[in-house]
Amino acid sequence: MRTPEQQQVNLIDFSREPTSDFLLPHRALLKSSGWGNIHFELHQQPEFETPEHQATWHVIAHCPRFYVSGSRSGDRWLDGKRKTEARNEGDIGIIPANVSQRCSWNILSQFTILAIDPALLKQVGQDLVDPDRIELIPHFMTEQDPLIQGIIAALRDELESAKIGGYLLVDSLKTTLALHLLRKYCTAPPQPRSYAGGLSKAKLQQVTEYIAEHLHREVKLIELAAIAQISPYHFLRLFKNSLGITPHQYILQRRIEKAKYLLLHTELSITEVAATAGFYDQSHLTRYFKRIVGVTPKQLLQD
Image (cartoon, rainbow, N blue to C red):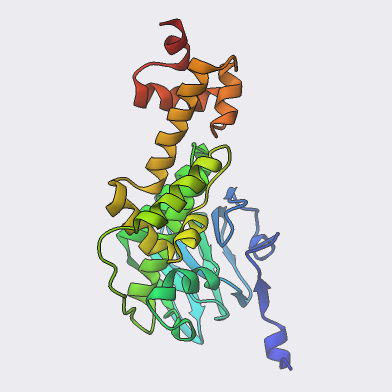
């Protein structure tokens, strides 16, 4: 049973709304949707102080580039300890799931919240570390991590632009992030198994056949890794070893090939071809078709 002190701690569940909005003066400027076991928020908030809270997911707090006069420094109480954070551009903090914190910001500021379902770390780390030993180490927002900064920038770009193949790209970034957290911020360092070469011929055939059958929809990395019966991290590496390109690049190539065939051998309109081949719309098809084939779908039909 919870003590009265524990009952006062606000709980954030990033798997459902309103996520963190109820703790802050204003709603998030950007918020991801449908990304499964990862959640992204970009905030711009005036001076504020949060009550004590904890999240059911791991949280990475990040200071993006934001031009505003004055210092963004403030205090954070994390896992029973207090520290004044400078919060320079690019600084990150890591708050593990179920660890209590509260913080104050003394000026209008932008910050990013990236939340990760603990189940993702167990999934990615299944070949690397005992799931019962996966525990992240709390870190105040006082250090830089270029890889995490790059992943956050890529996720923000994806959220703002909604480019083709977005779900597969997000899945790849999830896997990279989870592996990085296991390697650098986990109490038990990973002990990787040895995986040489690429996927077996049989597994590669199963994966490529599955992709061919599902080109019309988003194909997720976790689905492909499950077919190969290995973690998403090792699947990415072995797939690239086998074919020389990433799953994301391979799926894009197959969609272009399918679109080209449909354009030349059916009476479907370009819009219908785009939908059948798994593109968001005609403009997405045209952009990538021109980049890979060298001509637009319309120019191909005119030749």
